[in-house]
Image (cartoon, rainbow, N blue to C red; front, side, top):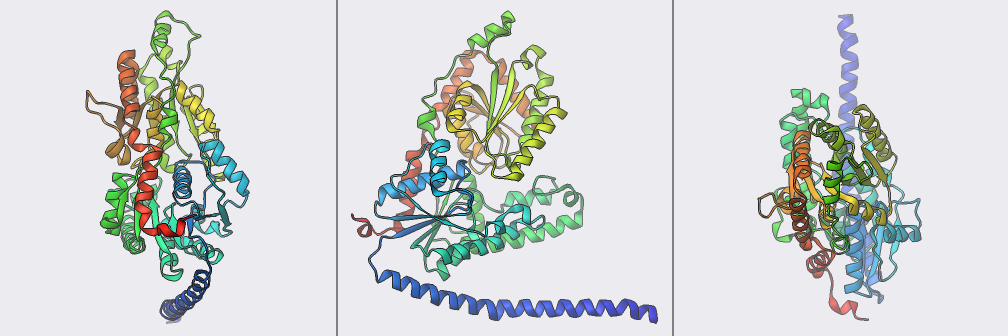
Length: 504
């Protein structure tokens, strides 16, 4: 009996503690939280009434905590801002950013250098100090939920710092939208690059497939897999509620539109606006004939140029750079040593911080492990001119992300005249790459073997056939131009603006 008492006493204590915690949580949800919401709404309503009593231009705030990385998502941000400033000259544009280390001038100069975008007028930056709440590394488990709840803290800091008339989330933090709509009284819209959760992710977990967002220990365990499916379904339900707070939704591809419609279920408010790709500038790059390369191989001339395979994309885990390295390893088994010595894979991309830099180091280690170090180069955080130089010297483009939401890097490589080999999924499959013979503008592949086979097929083509595909790729990208994006963005957001307010 004494032993039983020793076991039961701690158990009862644990039950009591859990009961108390549940009661506290219930009290917060049913009493404290509603009081905070009502109080905050009254405060912001008074603030808005005071501002409306004064004559002031309409203000548009873009929520983009990582506006200084210079990647495809940031091109969307800056092209959208330029479109708004051009269409509505008196509009005040504000950017919520967490890039505390960069001054406004440094950010703008980086935009000019990396993206070659110049704004008609200055913008105002609101610096957010709580960006750590949305950093993935702070949530080793329940990452999506942790980041989403953390975005509420960051969103509240933004709302307290500046109350805009129009709020646009351009990074996918949908949990911030109810704050700005129902507490701040703002008009709310978003540009969604990628659904935080999708039915494809649920299927991958259900099939117990190990991936960057589904570790091996979970994939191996039926119990953990079942728990993760419940978590994903719960999160998808909450994510749908948050998404339906948007008055206007813009998505970047047919794939994203399909998944957002299935979760948010507001198709009449959802518009597909392809992201802005620098097609006009890249189409000016001359397509170099490669007859000299073939001739040099036949003659054994060692001084002729390499045949370059170019991979453009941020060094993020979902871009799956290791798959590209494994494809190169497979490629080595399929070609002669003489040809292999002429092949070079060049990674061109940006790092957002220490985690991405560590990822690049890991990739270099993998290169050495696979004996690829002599055939792989890394170009990190290079200026836009250097990117164009790499594209001009390239013949083949590589992109291995599974379910890439769109694929700005894919389009840019095609505009520059490269023959793309992209993952058979997402935006590249649904919107960009055509594989039918006679109208082919690229290749699709699903694993390292298919990537290697596609590259071999390209290498063995005649120069004339390669040029035909390169020209077809270049001519297919006009619908993804900056001009088309700006027209679509302004058309979608027009209900937010009253023209009379923007007259000079």
